[in-house]
Amino acid sequence: MKGTVCKEIRSWTADDVRALCIRESLYTRGTNEQYDRMLQSVIDTPHPELIAIVDVAENICDHSDWPTLYGCSKNQAITKIANMLANDVVKVHFEIEIQ
Image 1 (cartoon, rainbow, N blue to C red):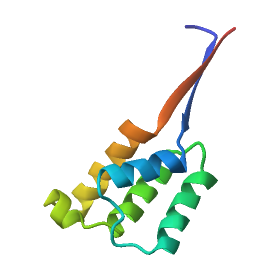
Image 2 (cartoon, rainbow, N blue to C red; image 1 turned 60 degrees about the vertical axis):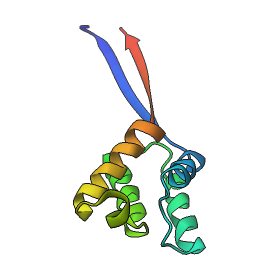
Image 3 (spheres, rainbow, N blue to C red; image 1 turned 30 degrees about the vertical axis):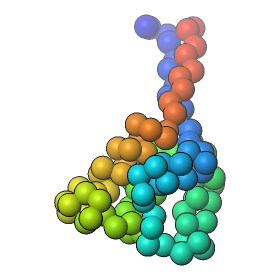
Image 4 (cartoon, rainbow, N blue to C red; image 1 turned 180 degrees about the vertical axis):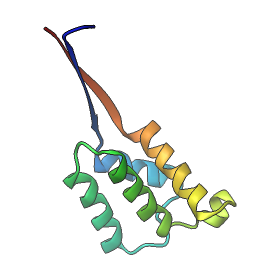
């Protein structure tokens, strides 16, 4: 792979985040304005790094009934939601250039 340039590109959509929230009964404790702001943050970050995924996971957790849903600590709930975002919502694409 000498001389090969590899690039990982992550992407997500507000529609996919919304679908996850609906499917998992998340964001049931937020207002419409808070929900719209969270979805706008996804739109504003079309290629999320880890911190953006965790920020959205924390926002979702803060506006969800995570003790009832998961019966765990807040940190564990954020981790679970971040993993759901990473595995079910975020798409990973590669660009490979052999030189």
